[in-house]
Image 1 (cartoon, rainbow, N blue to C red):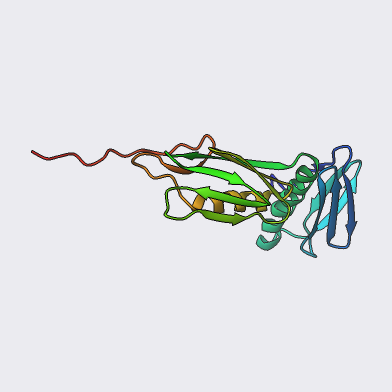
Image 2 (tube, rainbow, N blue to C red):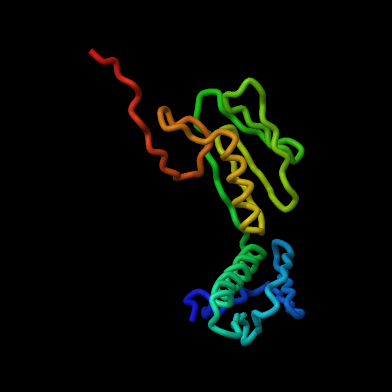
Length: 178
């Protein structure tokens, strides 16, 4: 039995779940999410908890079991609490600003980088930090990774965009030989 898949998903107060066939609709105070699960995985609601069951012990069913449970759990957490990733900008003259659902990054290139914020994501920024918020965990992580990819932290001075509390291993620069 999958250690993740066998755990039931608790449904917090204020969250409504509607299961129709293999379609799962989760509504909460922060929004609505919908997902189509694999048709062979059974999802049932019992006593305020969701249970995910697989029909057999085949390797494909085992892999779907834990994944399905975790996706549903992330949907429930997203509509009740939401997800957030924080980024830091380190470097002299490096900065970020948000205007009209568009992120503007000045990170040492000859031009500014403009990033259009996808629907369902809220980006807040002061000059040296960016926070990415939303109800879809996968989308929040993808947007944060995309923003970080515009100027990854370099190992000599540590300049660039990094996740908050990310450790960047620094290297020693070149030395003059004698």
